[in-house]
Image 1 (spheres, rainbow, N blue to C red):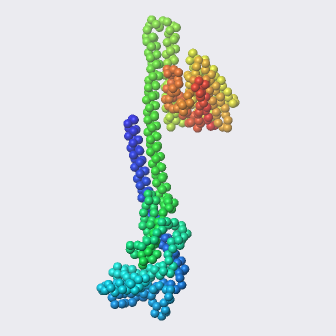
Image 2: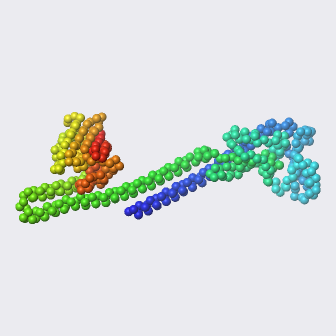
Image 3: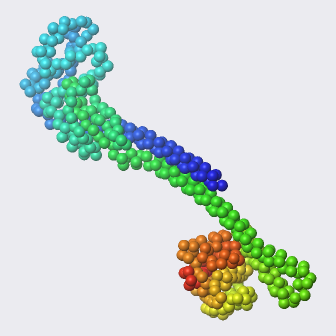
Length: 484
């Protein structure tokens, strides 16, 4: 049994860890996916902020610095696009930018170098084959940024203030010259542990490949909000798994405990039945001897011993039967109104105390008659068990006090004795099946540990509760409350 329980424990723990690990791995992937989705949305907002930053600089540009509106002109071996200034003179403060696109024809390199030397601040040489997919809108946009950078240079403080106004915090600003030409802003996701970040690249002057680079840390709260349903569902699944496994383990441990109690019950029953059986065998042997049967005094003693041991056997069998009936869920209580005081007085009259003990009863009832609503048979059995225990576990002079009262539609019963008492560490276990206290002075006392268990079951079946107050050497008080 112990080996099987250990195997179940190990398999349960392994299964739990695997399921929790799988669920955690799924949540981790969902977290990363949500972070990437959030980055895409966040970058769209950053692009809008970048456009807003360019618009602000455009409105605050120097007078005369107008954006370029380009016109295509065919030259020998070249295609050029430059500002149209045919009908108006160019202002001195304006910036003229000319695009020269290298055609399919081979041109003399000295002519290209000469052209660059003459107009190094306002000329860009592009290979037609590499820029044929670049639209005129992009060229106009980047040319606007180029002239804007000349008239109103880019300032990271302006971009940072706009980002913060939109709830975006960018850090680690740095200006760089990019290895490749970027026409619009981009980002690169990366991760520092479980913290997701994105490196944002803003080409504020694409033609010169001038970019600003910063880092944005993805906050945890919007990701958790985005994953709310997944987190709640996973939490519920893990909680149900833990509850099911815990219930399974508790059931296994309860079954193990019941199995141990059964073994203890069998051993106790063997021990308890052995004595009366041996006594009855001796009585029968005595009765079988004709010469000894002539002694009337000895004959009476043998008969009394036989009756006493038969009574013990009857008590054991009754306790097992009562507990079996109480454990049966189909057992129906026969509730009716009866006089509790009369029942208690009858139990006192019929009490069969041992000859070597002097038993005295004290009773006190709140009123006469003491009419209550309960099952009279089971109520009498409960009181009989408590009285029997009080007599059994007390000294030669036994004093039992029984107090009954009806208060606030509740029956309150107190059964107090002057017995050996129950140690504090054992008080929580005395109601368990087959359990017997360890402080019993004589292990030969008859009993199989079912009386108090039966009492507790029947009191709870009536919707009531039972508790005890006890100190070793100062007796025990059992308190029963049953609603009326």
